[in-house]
Image (cartoon, rainbow over all chains, first blue to last red):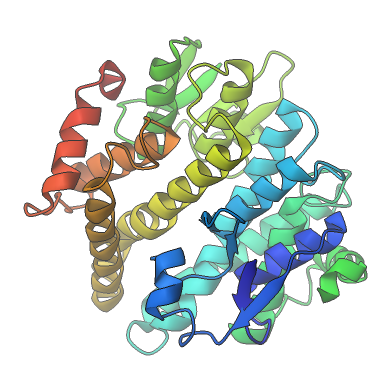
Length: 195
Length: 195
């Protein structure tokens, strides 16, 4: 059983939904009302952190953290290889996934929480995210996907992060990032983007 | 060639050094003066982000991001398995590594940069790190290592993060976290902790 948020807006559950769609794998899914149903004792027994998504296995083992869930599913369903097909490819895909997550997603995700209490921090975080997107625009000038010639988990994380920023964190894609915009149109046109 | 910081204080290069010591693997290493030698055009051609560590392979391919480097080395040197030995173990180790990194290390690392410009943000971040350490103390009440019965990359990341917090981010281990303190003494006694 996969637990996700009720209205499909949270970026981490979306990573798993896109990933599953790319794999062509279906998993029974339960939608929980955010901040309510993921705070019950029953759910906290599955994931004491309270975050979504969570994948509950048949033996009751619960896996939290979107990318850990995707890694597990990649081992069960290796094709298409979204984490890379060789040791070096896997390392490079992991590097690009971390760059997206740590340099773009984390500041985008943190910034809104500081707008009221610490506006200087919110602005600094948004500036880091801006620098990360400019860097990514340059990367995508030279290749079709974030980690190279093929669509990978790095694209999944980038798409979920940027859409979340644009829709919920007051952070639209900068208009002059033409390579990023072309990439965004390309990955958004895949059926998985609607998952 | 592995590029690390000159004086061994940066937490990310230390992860790789500890990891290599646990594996019993030696790699030629070059120490770069932080903020100077990792800002040269020559180094930015290896890693445009400018961060350390970087692993440069014989063919010139450069891998950045500490955990991506460790993942690559795990595939080349599988024993002892520090990322887990089965798909489920690997997923759980990844989940614990992410929890340490995202909930303890990221706030610990960001907080000092906001002390002057946005003290409310610094305090909020430190509070998140406190909550993460309290959670980890409870986890370590029930098992010897972060991800379970065996020493893994999650312990490497936790040790490097906590030592960095205590030494350089004005964040000593809370005195009443006895399980965390016992774990810290145990992993610090391993020869790898001096790497």
